[in-house]
Length: 205
Ligand code: MN3
Image (tube, rainbow, N blue to C red):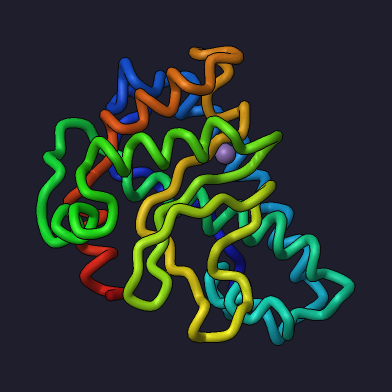
């Protein structure tokens, strides 16, 4: 089995004006496709690992042979992170459901979550991701460098499950926002599919 680029269930212009169609198209068909291709290339001579999903490869990253471990972190992470990211984007979905209650309990309000998440995303140096994760029963905001995934091998009790994630690589925003990362972060909060995020939260809590 080889990994394939997942189709988006919306058009490239569906997130306009917050995330522009050209960025979405290049991000999906070029950047994400490259992670998929390089993950497949890394696994080519390792049949024992070819039937694992990208998420399972990351969960078991310490069992992945050292010769391809970095490639799997970078490209398996890139594949899993982007697949997740596309799935939580949609315009005009209200912040509601149990995730809204849990955010209220943890952060006090949506505005406070947005403020803390945005600060972390703005401060992240270089390329990486900002996440809202479930760690045990707790919601936490974390960042990962490059394409590292919060799923990567850690003791089960400390494992972090992504609930929300934002790609803060320049390729995710440069065409529209150039160096204005804070504007892109602000825009992101207008295209979060809270219905989907709530489903992910309920499935994992
Ligand atoms: Mn990206």
